[in-house]
Image (cartoon, rainbow, N blue to C red; front, side, top):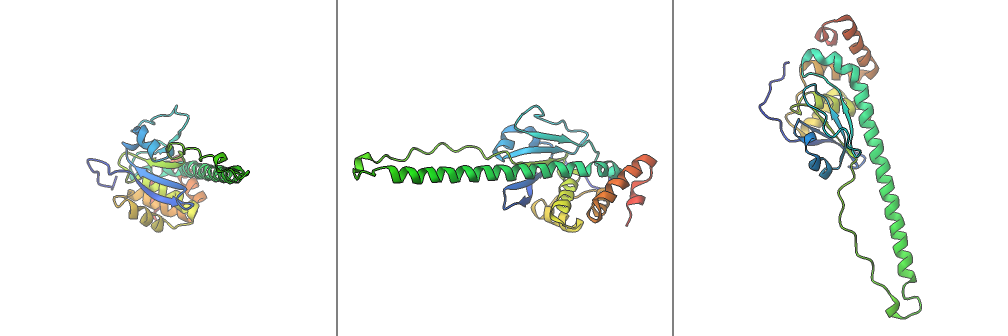
Length: 231
């Protein structure tokens, strides 16, 4: 692994905001997925674990969707990750679609409530007697944000998780590899995929299909990933 290790992971950060903030991708380390209350407070409903060493927490929680892609943070693990990148991107795309559906449902409910309030105000006191007017009902207490966002995590929140989030940005937003990494680093300056993952990301940005096929070929033949990845 060409990436220097740190003693502790930095806090998770929102690295991508899509659909006017209705869907966010967080990137973090090993601590965040183990804190259920924090996940709930941040509105995270999808957790993608890109490690061999970290367990998947709350896998039986019906409010969470989880996926584990067991990959080591080693340059020669790029082929293994390549074979699963399309699955990772599909998981995050499903999360984004769920967020859009939730937003549409909330907007429809708000519109229905507004229409009902207008109807109630027009009907109240229609006989001209102010005493027949009723006060509006009390507002309900605030509720936690809907669980629509996604967390991608590895052990340190620097290499594997960043690579997956960047691959999603390439596939979903049409970014190049460097643009995707720069976008993530703007929010999380310690983002630093190892050399093998960076080269994989370049290949992925050029052609996701070719990157997956390359990963399968390398794994099948036992070829040296860095030489195959070289551009």
